[in-house]
Image 1 (cartoon, helix red, strand yellow):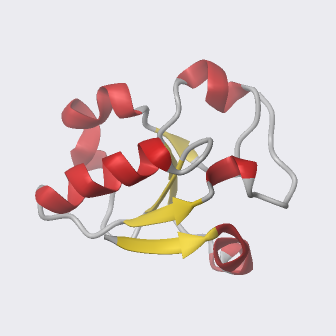
Image 2 (spheres, one colour):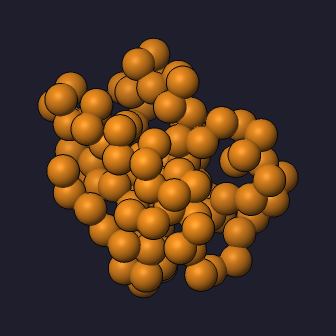
Length: 96
């Protein structure tokens, strides 16, 4: 499984990477990385085709995104887990 830390992901924001937040909608709405797409882990099996190769997966701590990364990798997709999750994120969050 490929991993990236939050500081490295933050440095890539200017390139507009695809960031998939796998938390539940209420968690996502309370604060997320700007331009992140919410595809909860609970919907992953039905929506995995919406996630492009090269996407970065994030959650609160890195646990759910690691599980999602393992699942998607087993489906033949190439995605990257963000270790530490939003607990380690040092940039501003967007709130809905």
